[in-house]
Length: 409
Ligand code: 7TS
Image 1 (cartoon, rainbow, N blue to C red):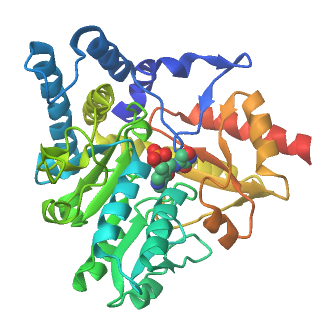
Image 2: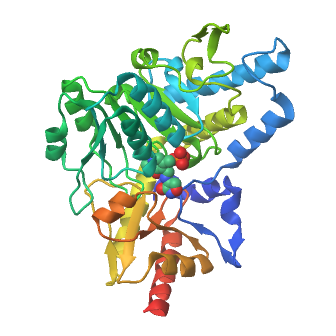
Image 3: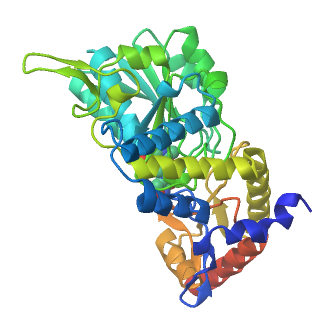
């Protein structure tokens, strides 16, 4: 037994919500891809901040403001180290992954996309890495191109290479698919795009909570993720961008903090990262995210990845013994997500019965409608794991699933 497993009760005790009941049954939370739960270390940090340190940042001369500013900027440095960015000003605080991608689509798109240009995304994308690009393409007269997948839910890299051309202005793909769990070969995608000097945005919303990410090693141009999926608070996310590119593109929103000098005739803009952070940010959110990263570092990202690998293998082994279950997404490289259908039973019906038995899963299209269309299915049942889940929770999930199937068959 690994140290991690020996400590699992201690780890679980850090997450107060995990000991609650729903419908009188112990909660089994398998909806981590939608949002993960928060340890006391994060909750307490946020309470402490509001009780003792709150003030607006980057402005007042007074003590509290200086203290809050210091804490917020420390959070930025923690994120920088966590993802291996070269500079802390390459870390832009946003509201989340969606906000970060909208920032790039608008700012980069307005500067660099012109009539006839192309943006490449993949069939595996979440709506938030499709719709912002569609909107800017429409505004600029550009076109969206889509990397196809195989039946296992893996990107067809040879097809991707064929899509790359002089018209391609940016490639935007996810690191890990939220609907299937496929881990994409993003290093290869980035290398191929770089050969043609095409920038790459990676949607890392489902990767950063589960595996080590190093943006310099990847050599991506933009990398986006959300705090609430990595044990931090909601309403805060990160856009990493390479300094040069961030300097090359215009601000996304105007307002306080992002300016250098304002007159009615002309406004000049602040330096990075403030140029992209208009208005009062989610200060408590940033500080809470730092506490979440400190927590992940304490457990060890490698330990998190290994524990989740074990859970996914176990769950896959158990669920595939149920004859009527059809797994959707069987890629060789997968992380923390089990998506499936049972005969022609609607996912919602299974989800509802599982819920009554205390098991929280997500059902539906998971904000990936084009992907569901590709498989010609309305949606799936999705169980998604975090390091605090256990094999005995998976046993309860499997027996609840069997019960649901017998009730619905
Ligand atoms: N990209 C991916 C890959 C995601 O999984 C999600 C959210 C987003 C972007 C958007 O993140 P947000 O924090 O800005 O909302 N995914 C899911 C999910 O799978 N179930 O609920 C939300």
